[in-house]
Length: 239
Image (cartoon, rainbow, N blue to C red; front, side, top):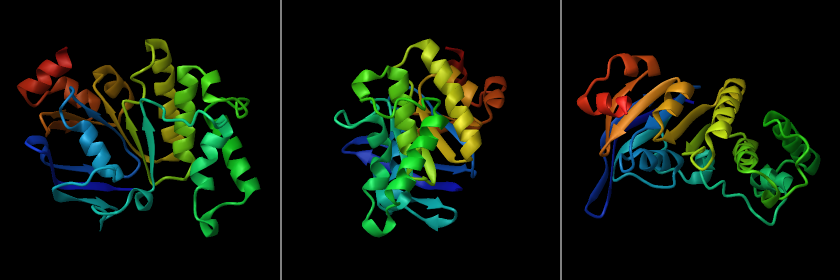
């Protein structure tokens, strides 16, 4: 799915979270929103997912105005740093939740849901943990389950907010590769927020560097490293 961000602006009281920003995200791209705290990257991600609405501007999905669509109608798969798994549910029940919560006419059959959960457990390379509870998993395993749950609903796009921020360096590196592999296998348009430039440069097809609610530079990781377009980008990438 192609995503067009057309002059999006957002304020919270007297704080400007996003000055008018525009961005084109091609279908199937893996895009990093990179910047320090307060740069507007999470606000932009939440607007894409329908968790926030802009004060001005439009969001278009494949050329159609999606600015005021509900979260459900956007069919976005979300992955958060906090995992947000249901503690009282098994791994399999967590992954199946989005499918089971659908209206009856749209809900797959029980065998179809079971097969989908099994396929996703194999995709995240944890085929034997469906009967466990989140408390019985490591942080890296929980994050993989959160990713599987986001994929279960067959989303149009995948949105991740600092997905590896709570994990140690070794696990982060492993999960980055896992995400890259899943992205390449599914072809989903994927946008993830990070303040970690190494993570952005290692994982993304396209990096969007943000500061103070503005987009400073957009480009391939190698382009941004080789030719930063502003003093901010130069200093931020050099850190």
